Amino acid sequence: MFVLVRYLSSSLCFFIILCFLWRCQSHHTDQEINQTAKQLLLADSINYFNPRAADSIYRLVIIDSAKISLNDFVKALLGLSSVYSNRSAFDSATTFVNKAFEIAESLNDTTLIMSCLLEKGNLTLNLGDHSQSEQCYKRGLVLAKLKKSSDFQNRFFLGLGNEQLDRGDYPGAGKTFTEAIKFAEKNGDEKNVALGMENLAITLKFSGEIREAIKYNKQALQIRKKLNLLRDYASGLQNLGILYRNLELNDSALICYRQAYTIFLELNDSLSIVRVRYNIGVILKNQKKFREAEDEMKSILQFCQQRNIIEGQVYSLSTLASIYDQTNRTEDGLIAIDSAIIKAKRIRLYANLSILYDRQHEILANLGRYKEAYMAALESRDLSDSLLSIDKQKEITTLKARFETERKEAENGMLKKDLEIQKSRIWLLWIGLMLASLTFTLLITLLYFRHRRVKHQKQLAEEKSLRMELEQKNREIELGKIQVETQLKEQELVFQALVRADLTNMNRSVREKLVPFKFKLPAKKDQEHFEQVLNNLTHEAAKDPMAEFEITFKQLHGSFYEKLLNRCPELSKTELQVCALIRLNLSTKDIANLINLAVASVDTTRHHIRKKLKLDQSENLSTFLITI
Image (cartoon, rainbow, N blue to C red; front, side, top):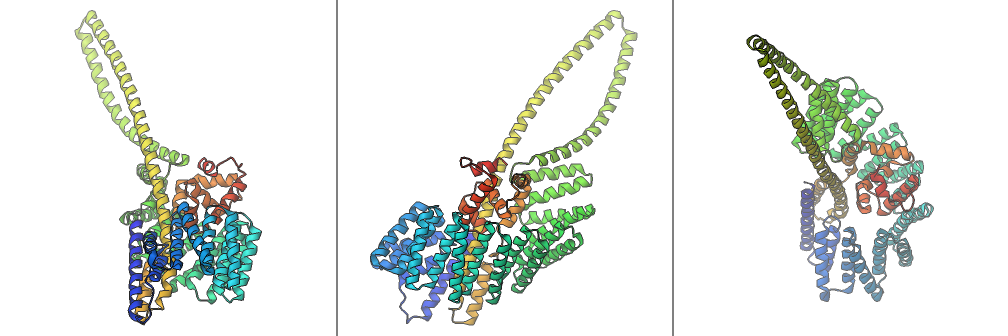
């Protein structure tokens, strides 16, 4: 489903760009725009959200190299390098960037050389070659200062800071980002000032200085508020709320979420509104403020019903069920969770059904309806994305035992009646035989019953042995089936999380690329139509790809975080998330994409995790986390 949405979004964006270029051409016929330049512009625009199409365009430019300038040829090579680097095909990316660098130096074109140095620096940083990456960024920074290019200076400053952050040089990274902030302030570039402060805040967060990180995040928020960047400001408020929750300052986090809610309400961003208010309700529930949490969730439910947001209805009903259960309104909780399951099935929200069935079976167990609770637990197991934990297995076994006990008691009652009737018949037969037969006949009869009893016992023993063998085989088959299904569902969890991250990044990139084109449209009506289409395409740009992942992972690996924190209580929330993703065998790039961090930051986080866990150089972090 997500792949289809991504394909349709990419295709529609591609069509919009083509239409826009055609309109520009029809309204500016007096301007002779080079065909190759238009192709490169188009490829650069769709590079991040449709790399396959960008790859084809870049290759078309290179195939036509006899008809184009070397300048355009170098740009096409750099574009291909970026495409292959994003695909983690680093060998091909290195070949393209080296060829581009060779041609740029032969042309002695400073701008091209800086572009090559920036691409090569980013590529070598992804490869972990800090020395080469640092060399590229520093050389590029020198050229940018000579060329007096503020844009390139900012980009090289950020690249150098990320390189220092990647190798754990927090003081160096902090100094570089501070210098970048001063440079942007000097040039009056407030947007880059805010960006530099965000990077400085990330550095402080990884070095454990959460309060300092909050300080710089607040300053970045002030700038974005001044520039009227409402959506970025609201997203920053959510990030600030996360930092407050890391410090267990839940009241401050609530203030941030409520401010973000007000802004999203003005922007009419329904999904962001639901997400922010849901987080508010969860915080209130965790604080045992059940009345306020219940009012918040009911308000979310009504909001989602009015706008037909089924997924929001499912989340609010599930949380309401938990609140009812904790406040001794179990019957109301059962009604709420049953409704949530029906709605989740309607929109095929399979990733959440397992959690919903778990909550249902807990409520049913509290009501003493063990048979239904057992069936709900089995449904949850079938939908689960990982191996059942020991606690979950015990819970299901207990429910099954209670159900089996009730069933066997009923069967035993029937058996007792049958045995009593059978016993009466046997006694009557014996009495008749004794009266009608002689001693010899009685002896034969006794021998016959003895033989029959022995044969029956032997038959029962054989049947019991066969039944035990059959049950053992069935258990082995069932275990194998569970393991296979678990592996497939775990892969599906990873795939869905990556697709959500790709979709979020794609939407953000689309908006960043296309917003400037709005103001190039001559007619105001076209601008409004363009803005409406762009908003429809990128309405999920602010959605956190880790939201659903966190819910599912905590349910499926409930003891993972607890065991990890028992071993090392100093681990931060971000480090715990990275540990979870490493346990699922994700690459560094995929992890960076999911938690919205640079690859360098992820590598730095891995280093800190190893350090906090006191792992030897010979110990593999992934292997260690799998054993947790």
